[in-house]
Image (cartoon, rainbow, N blue to C red; front, top):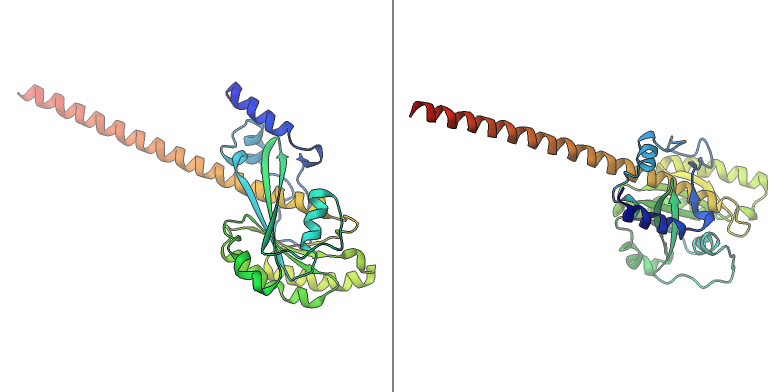
Length: 267
């Protein structure tokens, strides 16, 4: 890598907070609650990062959309992760709000945009326009509210309609309000729903902070690994195509040269 490019990468990484540096692949919350079998970064991804062959991935913005019923705790979740605060008296989100967080994943700078959408019906049309191109879809529900879990089918369908083959999550909030036995009962139903949605299940508490950071780190790890693998595949295909074009052109040039020599000999 040219010195100026290396310097710019180091500058970006140095601006990343120490608690946003990811060097290990974050595991799933529940072994039976995920369609994603990854437990580590792909070997090709590790090699590309160590050799600084990540192309435009480090310059891209990873977009995550957070959807779900009103008052399930979406904004509290974002505030806990981004600002490490919990405010039960926050104002309801109007339309869409968003936060930006910078990460370093295997020494590659990554920017995460978290789009926090309103749960009220009257804001759905506004929020839906922001789903487009999302790499991460998070459908939140209240672990203490069974009805909010039932609505996750519709939320997932609407969010994924405009998303870009996203990594999907079913996220339960307010875990701190449940006793261990009550939570166990809800978890059974949540795992069943996650399997139906082909999404990964997580249970969190914005009040205590339980599992909040691990959840977002897991989302970043899965998205980063998928994005870089796709980038490497595109580069490989492009290289093969370029190589084929060169061979075809060389063969054509050789034929024309021979043809020209034959005409000169016969004249």
